[in-house]
Image (cartoon, rainbow, N blue to C red; front, top):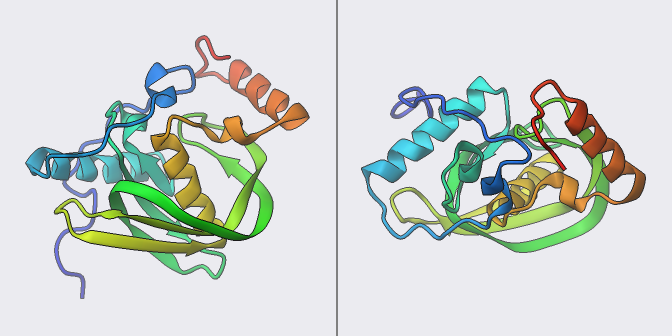
Length: 182
């Protein structure tokens, strides 16, 4: 039986920031205050991620320049990983580099083969300040790296080169949600 509420069930869905929003390209600030406002942000981020049918969401994607992300993501063995990390740091990557399909809630409908390590470890704290260490493999490792990139002001398209990058950015420019994308 589950203890407590389902993550996001008390949260509000916030507007998603899209490619071209300067907040997505700006590195996020460390969280220094662990209060009700931070807990509300995490709840809202879960609600927003679920509403957008995503597997991860960084705070700057909803307009908050803080180092926080949430996730509800399977790994390659279809095991579910659910949680959040405040002030995350990617402390270890390894294994083979796999070019796999990757998309982003801030670039809806755009996907490209993006190289990521098959193993990742993120260290940080919870919303209450308790230390947390998250280990991921396969698709979940991709998710952890993707969300840490967001908090450093990077999108998955920044990891693309050549034709893949040009195609992804062209698709973003032509997307119905596009305004003035690069």
